[in-house]
Length: 512
Image (cartoon, rainbow, N blue to C red; front, top):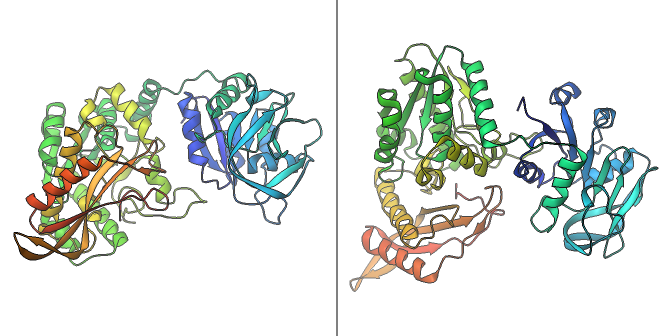
C-alpha cells in the first residue's frame, strides 16, 4: 500500500510465499507479493526498502527456469534469497548450483560459521526447516559461506558489502526456531525499516484510499455477520459517512438468529442506512436441484450482486459495492499468477462478469489476524472480532447435495448446538473455525427400539493462524459425546454424527 515502507517479495511459486508476507508484517513492516514476471516499473513504483526472493519448485540451471529481474540488483537495496531465491542469487552472480546428491526435507540443524546479516546475534546449533533438492556448490565471487547443515551442505551465504544474503532453509515457518529473529535482523538492521505497518496506520491509509476511490458517490456494503464485512463497513463508514448504506441479505442460508444479531449490532451505527433484504425464496429457488459446489458458489455470487444492484437502484448515486474480501480469498480464487484455483469465493472468483457496481475492497491484502487487529482498533466488540468465519455462500456449501429449506433448518439446528457447547466449554476462542456439515447420505440407526434411516452430520473444528493451512482440533471426547447426543436427540432426521480429522492440506477447511 502506498505510504508505507515496503518489502517486495518476489514470488517464484513457493507454497510458503504468503507465509513470508505474514512473518514480515508481524514485524510491523509492510510486505507486498509480486510475481517475478511483474513489469519493472510496477515494482519500482513500490519504492522497496528490500527484496525477499521466495522459494519455488524449479531448478535454476534448467532451461526456462524463472530468472532474477535486473531491477533487483540495480536498485542497490538489500536482498534476501530463500531456498530457490538463494540458488538464483548464486547462479546469477557467478556461483554454481548443482543437483544435490543428498536432499534435505524437514527439520535440520544449522551450524553457523560466520554470524553475519540475518544470522547476526545467533550462536550454537539452530533448528531450521529445509525443503530442497538442489544445492549451492560454490558461492559467487565476493560472497562468504555463513552456515552449513549437519550434512555439510551450504545453508547460508552473504555479501555484506552489497547487503545481499541467501539462506537455503525457510525462516518463515515456525519450525525454524529463530526464524523471526532472522527476519527482524534483515528488516531492521539491514534494510533500515522503522516498522510503520500498524493497525492505526492501516486504518488511516485505507480511509484515505476509500475517499479517493469513491469521491461523492454512494456505496453499498454487504454485511454477513462476520468480522471481515463488519470491519469493511466501519472503514467505509468512517471514510465517507452517510454515503454508505449497508445491506444484509437474508439468503435463507445464514446461521440461526444471524439476521437479528447483525441488525442489533449495526442498527445503532447506521440507522435507516441498514437495509435488511428478505431474499430466501430467491436464493433457494436459484439453487434448486444444484449439487455441484462450484455451481452453487457461482449462483450465489450472481444472486448477491443482483440483489445489491436492485437495492442500489433505489438509492441516489450509488456506484460502488464494498466487500470484505481478504487475502486468503484472493489466493484460493487464483489471485496469484502461479496459483491453481481451489474454489471460487463469491466475493472474488464467484462474481458475475457483468456488474453495474465497481468494487471497494479495503481488506483485500490483509490476513485474518490483521483484519481482527484492525477491528479491535476500530472499536468492534470482541464477541464479533473473534466470531468464527462464515463462508459467503453460507450454509449452501455446508449442505452437500441439493439445498432445500428443510435441509437448511436441520443444519442450522445442529450447527447451533455445536457452537453453543464449544462456548459452554470455554473452547470457542481456542478454535479458529467450527461448524456442522450435513452429508448427502443416510445411515441405519435405532431409536426407541425402532429402526431409523436418517441423515449424517459431520462436525469440523480447526486451529490455524492464517487459514492458509490448518490442523484439525483434538476436542475432548466428553465434549464430542455431548454434542453428538444433543444433535441426534434434538435435531429431527439425524441419527449419526461423525468428526472430521483432516488437516488443510490436503483438505480445505470447508467441505465445499
